[in-house]
Image (cartoon, rainbow, N blue to C red; front, side, top):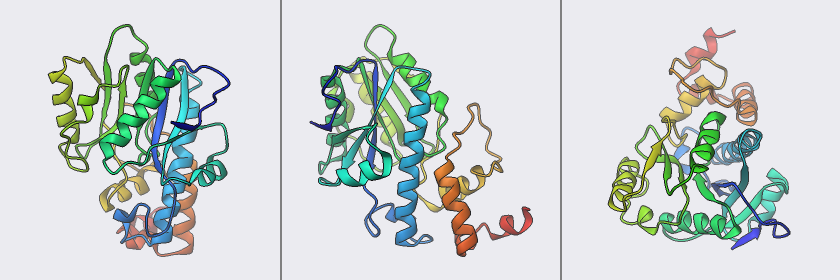
Length: 261
């Protein structure tokens, strides 16, 4: 059930929910420790959530989108209200199995009255706004269909559905490079047409953190069909850590820092 679901009015259009965890040092983004410290990893989680929220709001100016946080752990509503404000809905989605969390979130948005429901990761602060708009526009077309945004690590950053197809979350080896492929297999099994978005990356390891560090100031050599989101909260955090600590050295980017003006 949604904890704050704007019950005074019936929802419509596309609901997009970020799969989010409250920022707690030692419990959040621990795959980035080291090179990050626990407090820094938690700070990145907060900045990512702020930037993903801003990205959703920007997408909502171009498509009919309602934004949510599918959050955990239970009882952490105050963190999201304090960090993101009260203009974003909250859906409690804390289950032992990640697939159950995703399905619960999809169901919660469809029950609210949305014609389509999208689950979105919280690890891609620079995800192009245009991809969110594309997902909503594709799901607005007649007929049952899905939208999949594959991650460069083999998972997916986005999955959108018009019906709560339970099979899409069955027998998936979560947190592996097989997730996107297995999800497409499930779609084929049930005869579901899938629109595939351009790939993007998750910031969940050192290589991706380096990529983010390069992309934020606009130095990335990675070709982009879609313009990356500005991610101003993440940029501000990286700038501060580079000034106040040996962050750049710890992630192996010290030479770039020394060369760039």
